[in-house]
Length: 161
Image (cartoon, rainbow, N blue to C red):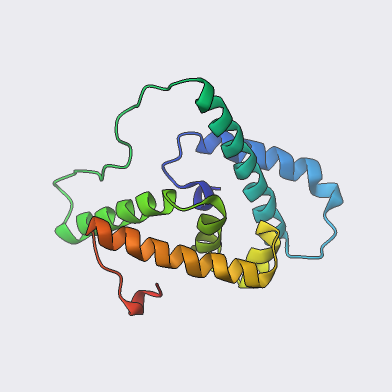
């Protein structure tokens, strides 16, 4: 769930709890047509989509006061410069990932970060393999553009994007 929702999601613990409950509730229906890992990812993805839809409807009714910027990188001066740079890169990537649509983010996270093959990604997000591939391609293009615009760092072809 952390991979799908983002590590800075304020409701991550709740999402994990709901996904775990849903998984245990549906465990008797697992038929083994896919790996258990793929099946659990699919449940987690659907729980996340349902939660995000609910939250968008809820937040449309209520104005929330903005809390502090949670995406700001950790400013610990005792870290070596390389570690600090890597944290800034990770923060920029997290921010860029949060700007993608749910299906695009899921494709990038599941394929590039969780290293699932495209057939498994397609099963999880409930689409055909070609659609999953096009979502991944479009998400990578958008990520590259977002990261270059922010000038946090530039992705090269060697990085897979």
